[in-house]
Image (cartoon, rainbow, N blue to C red):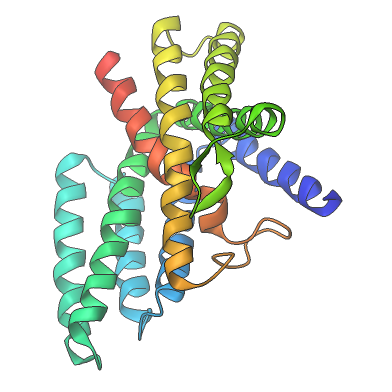
Length: 254
């Protein structure tokens, strides 16, 4: 528990430093994207991770010099990555299976995170706010679930996650989001409340989706990213789902 807490604090501190005080937010998210694609390919037992990782790295590398573009670039890069990856996997022992796994990785990781990367260039503090709300949601859901939890949300996937815990997480995250924004002054109060609400709902769902993927693969942790915390997918499963939804909501309401 001590090691987990220590490394959790280091992880949070690094993210706060990057997203709060530097211009490296898009690069950090690009590195996270490669880590996530690698872990997903590993736990899905893809015959070869090389094409997926090389092609995505090249596209992200080009994005660094082009400012990661806009919505058109997301669509174009996703189509290009899907086409090239499918072509390179035709020689696999089970090409249809490999292509399905590769396309799932693109849909699950590439599309939401490339959108998040684009937003990070102009909205790094909003990304940091999303991280803080995810941590708040996890903490409040854990506390409420520990003391009041009785009815599991998804008994097969995560028996410790309860309806009571999720309700507590929603309420707690709303309060923390509004209060934090009063001091942070990032956005109008109604937008902060809307983002906190969306994150408190989508973050637990993202965690459950990752649990389903890991259960299907027969693994407990997706890899080794932080001591005591498992892999990158274990740390960013909620972010994959919550961040793009919150960013779309923020841009719409703004």
